[in-house]
Length: 57
Image (cartoon, rainbow, N blue to C red; front, top):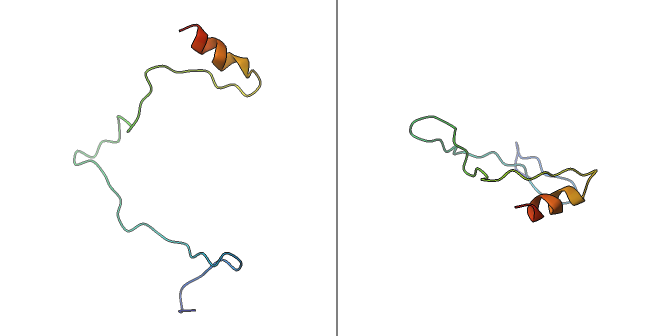
């Protein structure tokens, strides 16, 4: 194993760090890459809420 490289014991995967960070030329971060037109409920305690919201459209 080369010095300075750490790998996971069982999977033999090595961590990596990205060398490039992409940013818009203007520097703004909004709007996001994807903005939804319709916000739908996602309540884990009321599973039918999403179905009812879609049926109401």
